[in-house]
Image 1: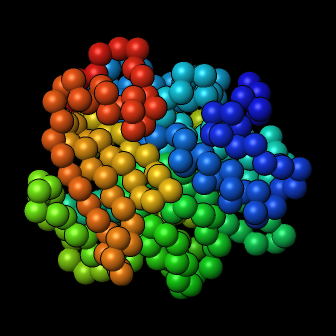
Image 2 (image 1 turned 180 degrees about the vertical axis):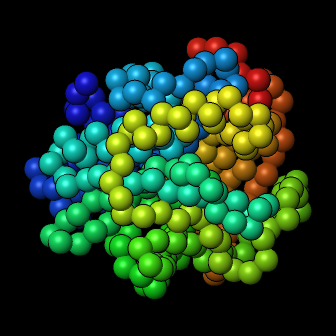
Length: 281
């Protein structure tokens, strides 16, 4: 394992001698723009090992992506190597269908302390609600970024992470998005505490997500990648391209259904992903 090899994977070639906020921000953004959030292994007959060496080989050497457990584990390793004061935290994602947070911890995120300030860094949320910069851990403070406005709310030691939604413009030639958005303009994302975790705390989750037929990751093949303008997402055969703030407070959303042949080409061209095994979208 080699930090320079990781830097090449994320196309980062700037100075990293200081473990400061600017360095953290730029590395985080390069990580997001290079490494897709994806669960394609589950739909290729591959087993996902929650192990640093396996994760490094998959994402850095094979140029794949990973889900939150993998991409945040790799980022944790890189930041630790660079001398950042970083620890792993566990979160419970909000489930809109249930209108409640998951009972069990099902998300991983990172806390980085710089000059006495705590920042949340999470490269593994994927989708159109992925933050692009470290977020200072302060309750009730709006933190605007290109993808939207983020905020934390704290209640009795539990932190709640949420995002302010923007309107979406879908041109007529695009196919309509499926699903009914939750009412209101606040998207609840997950809750967490500041109790430090070890990656082994997530081994059971890593196994259950691959075996349980009920979770969304089993039901849908997903690959998403942040871009300097927005996001690409491939869910099953549906390719979506989002351009943030196309108009004031409105994102442009273009949706297309692909053929099997186009899925493989799109993975390579848009996400830089070439699979070793046959994908069943």
